[in-house]
Amino acid sequence: QRFADKGLMAHGLAHLHSGWAVEKAVTGEEARVVLLRFGHDYDPECMLMDELLLESSHTLESSCRIYLVDIKEVPDFSQQYDLYDPCTLMFFYRGRHLQLELGLGDRYKITWPVGGAKELIDIVEAVRRGAQQGRDLIVAT
Image 1 (cartoon, one colour):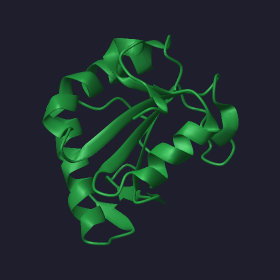
Image 2 (spheres, helix red, strand yellow):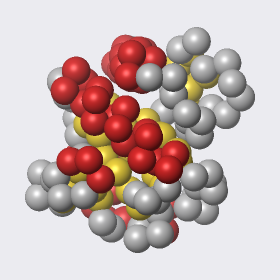
Image 3 (cartoon, helix red, strand yellow):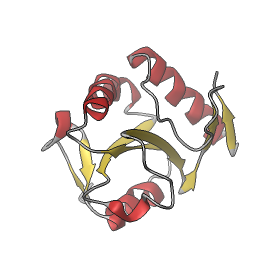
């Protein structure tokens, strides 16, 4: 897709460089879940998360589109989504922001280190199933 910079930064994952590109990515995908990683490319937590995202990306490519958004470069959503943690994952489906219940409190985003590629894949698959069933709140414990 022409609004994403593929493979030029942070482990070969697609970067979005503007608020417009983020909006297009979220609203333009009809079939797959969109996972946005907000944070700083140089932050150690984000670097670890990016490695997990890259490791999982091939398995998830048919069900999930993954994008990286550096919140220093694209601050447009920082206030709207309270993006104050070093690394944040958020999920969208057909333009809707999905809420998650993972048994850990926050329903709008993941702000903690995910335990590994398998856990990330399991979360994304649960999100995809819930989103395709039309759920606004997805329970994945």
